[in-house]
Image (tube, rainbow over all chains, first blue to last red; front, top):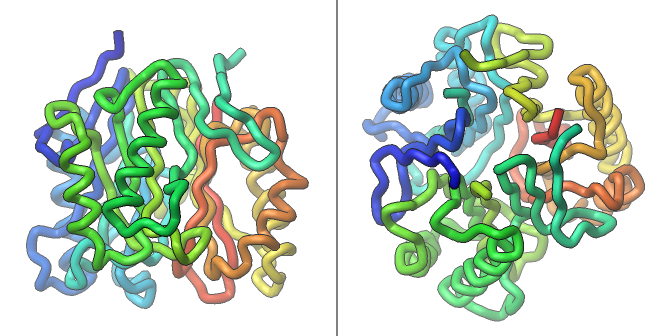
Length: 116
Length: 116
Length: 116
């Protein structure tokens, strides 16, 4: 029997799912979609912190992260906020790509895999 | 020695790979590429069900899913079929993005990580 | 306490992260960005081989791979090099999509999950 725990399971998706000692998060976007890339990145990272905390872990245990950006021209703005946030010695493996997201005003979305 | 089992390993990819109690699927697309977004989404989900069954699991144990869409303008059509299919209390963490796929007629592709 | 090992942890990301017996790599791109799709694919795969070796594993143990391409019109060129490289009986689950990458001259990027 698998040991699975789901955070805020809704009819469409869960916010995060723990399987054994591995945690998978949904794609996190900013609450305030009026923000520019720096504001939205900070917002996403704050929400990601909250999700990780609810799952009993934190950013020092992120294993892998995928960052989706509406416009790769905003790469340096995202990185500036990311670099200040990330737990340097414990930085995750990272992949960043451009992609149309769920709504045009969403600038950045992040999906993480973390250790419990 | 790692415990790895591969489903339908071909010269290019396997349909799914189990490692311990975690299963990784390839990107699943519709067989009938003439279908609209609802038809293709239903087709993809039927194929995903089949792959999960062959791996000895089912949709209630999907941990994480990434949904790639040729046109995010078809988001609500995909969601309508998804919402009817997903196992509500056991919904996975989900990320959806737009992306050019392997052929222009492919409307949607899904890649899952599931528990064994 | 989680068993986590990070390869080349930098202020922004790590090259790869091992958690238990699962390894997550960062997105790998070519060193020589003047190359065409075949040259860049070969370059990426060579770097991926090196990363897997540094983590004590190899391509026969890749579980899942995501391939990001600047232009899906180069799909067959990428596949030609991929097919010659991949360890056939042990091919991973694979997903390929088009996406703007970190710089316009980058043709292809690959992110892998492998068994230790």
